[in-house]
Length: 435
Image 1 (cartoon, one colour):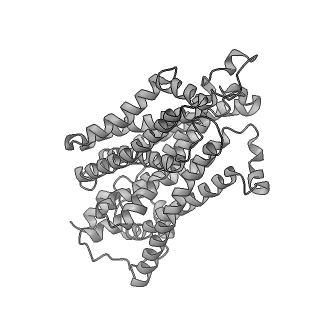
Image 2: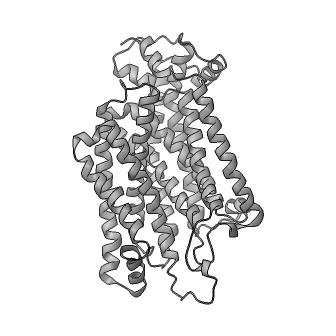
């Protein structure tokens, strides 16, 4: 393979076409509708959502936990698998980091949707107390976003230099952007040493930052004494669940880029097979923590836990609970043990099911616990007793997903989805002209 062929394969999608404009137009119109719904909530108050005095954390908090979870995939792919020397992850790393940056960037905005007075967000920084897990959460989310952004940008430096000097037909306005982002990279040994060392340091820092971001999120629940949240395993339980959601998201993105950007030679069946194995592994770990979450309180069966578990296992939440556990965890693991289900199309369908179940799993974690307060619910309106999302709440919940799609679309459209410089080195293309 020649360098020219490699550049053409990995950059031919970098152009503004009708399909891109239609897709972006659809996303922007959808986002405007969701923002209009948020303006109603901002003007009237949180009463337009389904959250009330008892269920004060609704879909918004379930969304926040899901977004923080999905952002951890950058650490798993680049940090863990990259540091232990898995060579097959090269075409997957930028996809994982793009997803991590998009979800981490939006996660901070998700929490604002649950605030009745969002203008007071600055008070968290001005008057935040060290004892508050919310302050910890804000700090680690920002830290993780910065680290992920740097980890996405540094490998792009060499790619920008290659594309800027190539003869590939690109939009004229992009070449100055690529030149600026290349930082005058010329493949000198000292430049490669600085970038490689910086990436390695970031990968090492990313692991504790990623573990912290979702562990702290879990502490927002676990530091209370409510049945369903009063647990010491919530940290690793949330982290393992995050790897499941993130791995499913990467598989879906891989399938989309492979098909629409014609990357079959770079995102091969082997990559889908290996990502399937990763998803099976993290799902088994997550299954272990799921068993712990329910068996231990079920064995002790305190009164509040008994009420909570009954609703989950055989009560009003039972259908959703068992669909999540069986359809989003057990069956996907069983299917992916067979090679035929780790092919691109079958595993993508499985990943979609896993991802949908992952969101509803956060819903199950957040909502039912609040419907079982220690004090009896009495002398309140009927809509205080049970939680039901409203249309406005659903639209506001959809807005962060649209923002994530916009970010991923823009990054993947104007930059190579597959690391160009690293792929060239792996394919034995040593002579790359930078001067």
